[in-house]
Amino acid sequence: MPQSNVLRGSIDDLNRPYVKLTIAGFAEPLTAFIDTGFNGSLIVDRDQAQRMGFETTSQHYVSAVLASHRPEVFLLSRGRITWFGEQVFLSALVIQESDHERVTRRRRKRQEEIVLGVELLFNCRLEIDFSERSVLIKRLD
Image 1: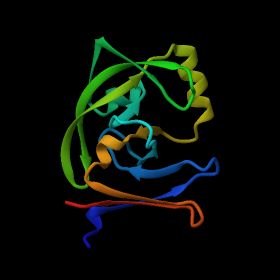
Image 2: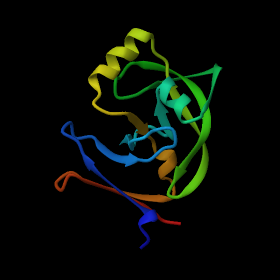
Image 3: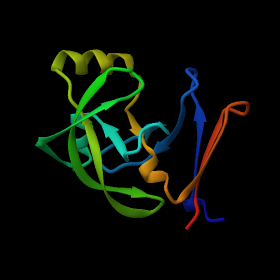
């Protein structure tokens, strides 16, 4: 099987499955935490959306309840990423936060992180093995 049809990842120390994605605009791969409860494509912050070249609207707000168990408000953005070697056009949710919230959140992070939802996984097999602490995303088509 060609390597371009497989993404391998791991389980972090908080038991969150992730893969590393190479995305235009970033010198280092981004850590993409897999959230099977999120039916969209990506959740990014405003800076990340800008660096990815996504167009963010200030008119379309989306509300969702995620792992925080509290309502979160997002802006809608659209752009392209490379997914398994192909350019795909998608919508991403952009986190709405104050400057203080953004600084506080970034202080907790060691690297760039985004959330990857199931919309990008529709034509894939996702295997998460907690005992081996491994993640495999295999493109099926």
